[in-house]
Amino acid sequence: MLRNDLTTALRALRRHPSYSVINVVGLAVGIAACLLISLFVRHELSYDTFHEDADRIHRLVSDWGDTAMPASTWPTINAIQEQNPSLELAPFFETRAVVHRNTKQFNEDPVFVARPSFFEAFTFPTRRGSAREAFSRPYTAVLTPAMADKYFGDAHAVGKTLQMTGLNGGDRTVEVTVAGVLAPLPEASHFYPQIVVSWATMDAAFNFTEAQRESSGGGFRAYLKVPDGTAPDSLAATFTEQAKARRGDDWRGATLRLQPLTDIHLYSDLSLEIEPNGSAAYVALFVAIALFILLLAGMNVVNLSTARSTGPKRLACGRRSGPTDRN
Image (cartoon, helix red, strand yellow):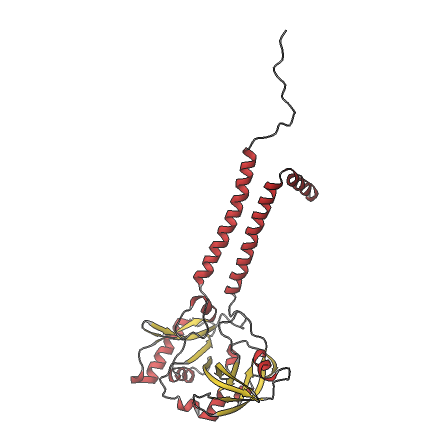
């Protein structure tokens, strides 16, 4: 069967080369374009799905009337943490620092500061060393492979030290030990922590948590795993009431809500995003373009087939004989 089809196709190609080439090339280009677009769409839809329990991970968002941001004040996050000790809450914030190692010195922005729960909420495995256990100790940090190569070259970074100046906005230098090197970060992530310093480092060097106890600065982020069977909207409403009760007269009227992790890249364009996000509208546009291209390719094949079938045909029986002479 396949042999007969191939023979028929080759005969058609020899008899009508132009028609066959236009048909094949047009359809091939259309299918190739659709495949490339589908790869892009698949990549956009895969953001943050590499985390374990990605469907349960949400981030805390503060709505201030017309302004919404994926961050809050430390007293608000601390109140939620204290009143819901069973929740897997992962607070962190970004800062900047001048990082130096011997003669190498670079301005790093951002540097993430996180608690051990950061590595429980997110799946950022380490290639060497440890992360979660080490983050219970002060003066520790983990790096990505790119950062490890940047400061240490081919040498193993674990156990080596880095000096960081300006972690808390001043000119004090803190020495941290590299406790681990992360595995290469997946590209489909809505943020890329290149350097992560333990929160215990900030407490030991600057008494940070206590200094922020009454701070109204809103640069702190929090992610959590919503327990099975719990509605995120109901949990967020509870958080709002807890924070409002804890802050009392200092509460400024923000409403807290929980945003699914897998919705961030395509459906979030808030103030203070960690990284620029994509757009679901653009993904839908590319899907429409792919369908349109495939439709055009199909119409091209149909039109050419119709034109060929309705065009002038060659006579298969030779020259038609004239009328018979009657005697």
